[in-house]
Amino acid sequence: MSSDSRAQVKKSISLQSQIKEQHANLESQYQAIIAAPEVKTLDSILPAEPLLLMGAGPVPISHAVSRANGVVINHLGPTMNEVVDHVKKMARYAFQTDSDKILGVSGPASAAMEMAVTNLLWPGRRALALQLGTFSERLVQMAQAVGAEVVVLNSSGIEPVGAEAVRKVLDQEQIDVLLLVQGETSCGVKIVELPEITRLGKAHGAHVVVDAVCTLTTMPMQMDAWGVDVCIAGGQKGLSSIPGVSLIAFSDNAWEAIESRSSNCPHWCLDAIRAQQFWGGQQYHYTAPVPGILALYEALRQICEETLPRRFERHFLSSKALQKGIEAMGLDLYVPEKYRLNSVVAIKTPETADSESIRQTMSTSFNVEISGAFGLDIMRIGQMGEQCRSHNLFKVLYALGMSCRNYNIELDISTGMAELERHLVLDADHFVD
Image (cartoon, rainbow, N blue to C red; front, side, top):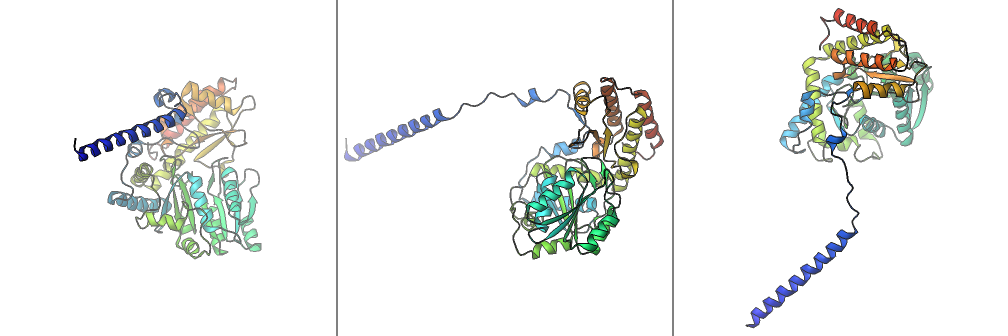
């Protein structure tokens, strides 16, 4: 055997020895790995018949939104650029704004709320927050967390804060940002004097931030006409898209304040300037939630196709018919009509039963799900997007009535169903189903 051949054999033996050693090391590492858990398949967990989601969110989605949510494309390619351009165009219609500072947020509506707060508030800035319930309180907590001083104006019971109370505070205090919700999902109360309050804020030099998560496209929101600087929407409520992707719109005035701040935004992903690189310049910020954006595209397209006036009317008539049916059946609504939020209807829980038991019966016996509340003895039925269809109204009202009866609550279910039908028939020429 030649010297070259012997060298090759030695090299081959050495390589085999190295491979065996590597395999032995890997096997010892594999033995140290904790055993994989035994898990059920998703099909075995999900119910054979999906629950009808009639709570305060998330809401049912259309087939078009569902199909779009199953597609993945390059988040930086030309196709995505076109999708984003159209999403912004349709969102401007939904927000009723000419602003080009429309951003998507990879996260729930609370993430969009946090983007608004962390970009406009910092130590040394002062905010006035109108507190009605859980979500307006969340704005307070976010503002305090970034070091801003927060003046809280609490509502009186279930009566929303009015314009006069806001004016008194603004006359006495230097306020940089006014924080409020258009409709408080947690208790079913709406701010009746929203246009007057936002205009007061602008007149006093404050930037106005409005949470319109459950109200955008379910009732009028005139961002530009009312002087709103930042408007927030979540996909899973009023827009009737999927959870996890939200929208936020900034006015030019708010954007100038963000660009001129002396310190950087403390949250990298929620930095509006960085986000604008993707939503305004088709440049990389982070990997965009592609299926969620495509789902949002379809939800917004359907809103534009329906048109806002028809959509507002459908939501109004649907909710009013349901409210009349609930009352005719013998249950009491929690909020007086003048302050009542139509997109989330709050119902007093009968004294002889508890909300959780009634809702559990609705889920298990009728495959209908509604919401409880945060510290309030009420039940909440959503009236947003795909929830506002006549067949859903009949099903949720019947399920509610029969589940209450299961706990010996005396209700006239037939009268309630008849009253619901009567109002739908009266409005048949206007109700879009």
